[in-house]
Image (cartoon, helix red, strand yellow):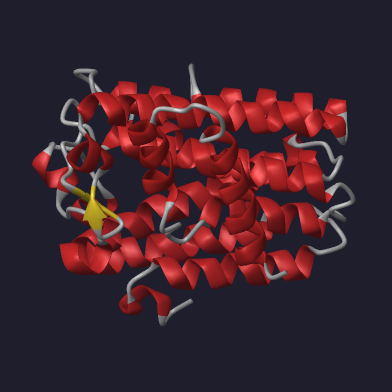
Length: 288
């Protein structure tokens, strides 16, 4: 089974678990709607790739971790699109969850995905209780306060924004979760993997700014110009297209250099480069 199929299977199995029994039909449908199509699945791809580079000796734990991380990411998108935040009408080329199902069901769908993410990690304890506990702790830290994705959203309500803390929480936190959870799923110390995740997250943020500047809504599958609309700084506004492109490649080089020593180090570096090409406009990717 290839990497994409492995991740998609893990996510589908998690959603089926969330729809089991006498579940409310509309909410059950919203869970599947929010997670399909899967987009780039870059975070779980990084997670599984790190686990494989470290040996991947407990694939059941790795698959649970990958599903949990993707569910948390999808939950954050559902909530991020709500009228109280970005008020986005589309996501991944189709109506956002609150447009398709209503605002109350979007809130509940996001909440349900978060709960399901932690349930998947708890269930992985049958394979290895200690790894399961570490995965729960890591995902909780990178999702909540003081520096997870909840904090990232919270910075948008402050009069004065610490931009590094804002980007590190809103965008970088789940990439740190990806690298650390991949290591933990393979029984390795997650701490040395934080820098790689942090750098990938920073590169992703710059890439997202570039894509927002050069692509249209039809290409991205979501509204463009959100930073300008909400008065948020971004790399292109600060550095211009060329400057942001150079910044992106500098960060990416640092990310690859920060990969901890492991059996699959070369393979992991190749994967990071490949994912980077998928995420950037041709003007930036051509220099990768």
